Amino acid sequence: MSKWIFQEIKNTLSKSRIGKAMAYAYARWDMLSEYLRDGNLQIDNNLIENAIHPVALGRKNWMFAGSHETAQRAAMIYLILRYLQKA
Image (cartoon, rainbow, N blue to C red; front, side, top):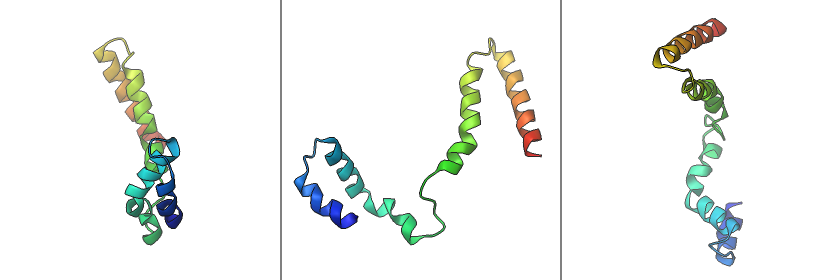
């Protein structure tokens, strides 16, 4: 794959979408393919994204809690529920 990108990038318009994608991959090829050399690395960050998703959603919802005190109470209840869920 890397050989193909390295050859075809010369024949692609740099302002086109595929040209930009190829330039991105070309500039970061070593970092993008590091997981092939190290079996401990994951190809994506889905585990982390899924772990922080509830926190991000809660943060977004707490903006509309009505008041600062209500938001704090909602956060405490949320944390208690999260703790009980893991237990």
